[in-house]
Length: 202
Image (cartoon, rainbow, N blue to C red; front, side):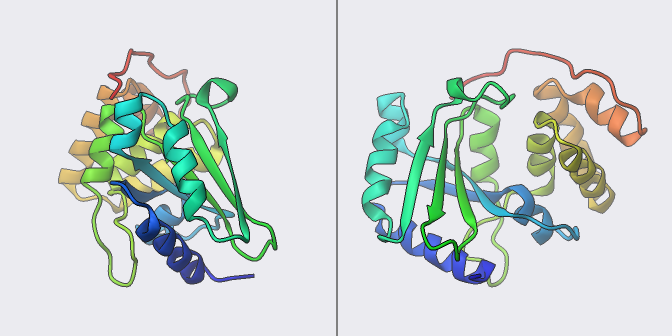
């Protein structure tokens, strides 16, 4: 099995070969690890956006160009958000897999909301990591929008590591995405249905 470092280097080479603009940041389980929480992950997740997606109002063209940048050993599949009813965020996602099974799976989640694009733009560089990493507040917000047990655990653990300023930002984001009640309940070990609000699309 290839290391995470090998996987990140390969992704970096793919991004360098991409002929157009691309905003990208590490999210998901590996971002949680980099933020200081011990856990495991079976894939490497990124949140991405490009002017190509914006101009065409669709991720298909972005996907077609990305396919040309992949080494032969990789195959990719674009799944539209509308085809994934279990995804509460309804994102288009590009799944990249190594045919030889040596690299971790790579997931490109296409940013759908303005706050996600902000998350990419506010992501921070970390030493020896070739991609910016989403900050704790935005990472917690993404986890709040998900519904898994591990996501809930990540939120609680991330908040424990936050500064007071980061906590204020997290509560502000939670309110913005309609998950402030869920955040309060998680932090008090309760569980109620999340608030639902209409979010602003990019």
